[in-house]
Length: 179
Ligand code: SF4
Ligand code: SF4
Image (tube, rainbow, N blue to C red; front, side):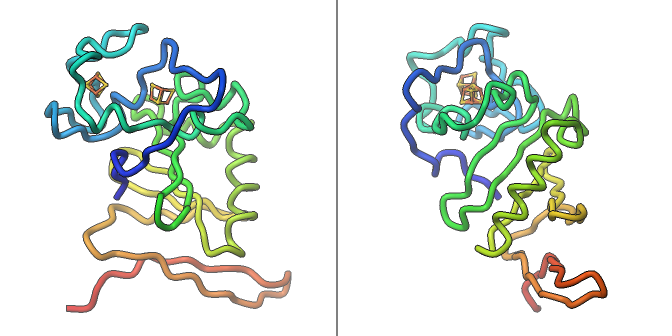
């Protein structure tokens, strides 16, 4: 679903990975046969990449949202938050890839409340906040979470507004290609 190599951005002034290496655990990196959910074998805990000078382009290109956006506070640094934030370069939806060692960390504060506020701000723009635990996705809405499961090729999200006694709400579902 997410191709980190498609996200090429410049770090914000003063931002540096430091001891963080979480993106070396949560994504597939085929060039070094690293599988999402397990540390890449080249990761050096608290130090970074053991093959820094020759690391794949995939790794050189990637910067998480905390690295590129100075408005994200220190609590969102991935090695502290235990989640890596990115914006989808096409849909502009927010992807939250959690450390599979702490799959429920996103439900804790201050994270959960902020994810819901971002969801509320994103919905009118037909953008979403998506939490991924390995390949399993949960959609965060302003008032509830929706388990979407694993996305297959061609799956997409469809939003529909619905009037309730408490006002307008939005339903979002995953739709698969017909046939
Ligand atoms: S998750 Fe972000 S801060 Fe951490 S190592 Fe990767 S790019 Fe750097
Ligand atoms: S090659 Fe280096 S930068 Fe790339 S995933 Fe492995 S440890 Fe991280």
